[in-house]
Length: 378
Ligand code: NAD
Image 1 (cartoon, protein in one colour):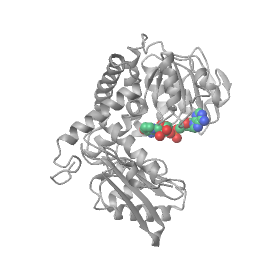
Image 2 (spheres, helix red, strand yellow):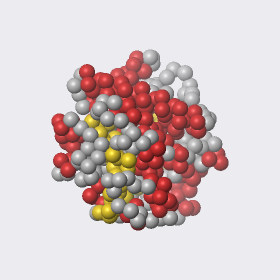
Image 3 (tube, helix red, strand yellow):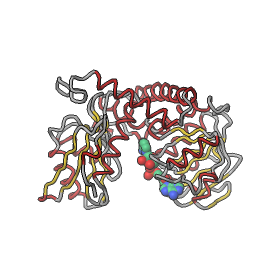
Image 4 (tube, protein in one colour):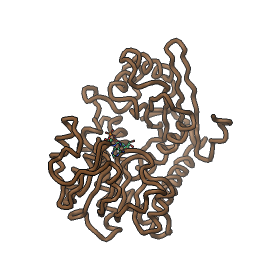
């Protein structure tokens, strides 16, 4: 239970918290517009039956930092929508359309998909009010999971970060936890650069092979609805065994908090790239830092997806999206790693300081620090 919403305000935001309620269709939602000094907020609509305003506040702030880190002209925001995302399609459509209509005038927020919402939901929002990213290809969308925007971004970050770990991507041993949109593309792009995939896990199990696994075959198996453990090479293990496989690069691309105080000592790697959101607890990140294992935080490493979304909003082509991800993520990782080294900080702390500094600079350029005097624009 949240006692006092003002306890959640600090020097950056949130600028607006809007509670939406329409009993006739059972609509209950909260929009948090965190910081919009750089431009209208981009952040997804999360639909679930256990969402809270507090979660929405934290996720909106995470988007402020991620968008600032990526150098996008967008602030951070988020919507939580109460409901079971697997409800009948007609009910879901009515709910989403009502949500969009109820926030028609909240021009400082651009809708995007998150857990429980997809391209189809974004198409309904487009039809109602137009201010949305993550659309189907037929409506000018760039399907970021299909093209592997986040996995491609992780590869760019890997190439910069390995320079700080004294090894190169070609020949590096790679382990990936989670073989969905993020994990499979990270594995594909990195092995194309010469890395060797020695272990991978999905929710059903882990497969390990020190000589290297066939990524195309694994992607094919997943396409047939099978598990990575159905691969006829290597050794099949339990899902959790992916933590123990010795490697140079370990990528969590599944669930939050998978590495924590209780298992961080089992990780035997030199570089962790956080593909998932909050896959490591703060305690685990600190512990890795103390051991000299470089850990690139989520809001730096997995920003490829939101860069793609921001480019889609401006009508960019797919090739321009890949170029922007490469340029922004390489420059940003370089800055973060340099600051980490010079100021002797954890990468997360260095990245947060850089992002907050950027947000404050954009606030200095506003008359009111957050809201613009001119109308909201792209
Ligand atoms: P996804 O649903 O496509 O894939 C998730 C994968 O994780 C699946 O292969 C699933 O089998 C596996 N998995 C689930 N539980 C597991 C377990 N206990 N052990 C091993 N594997 C397990 O999801 P996704 O889009 O790839 O997203 C993965 C994570 O990355 C999420 O935390 C998401 O929020 C984050 N993220 C995604 C994007 C994006 O572009 N899709 C961008 C930024 C962050």
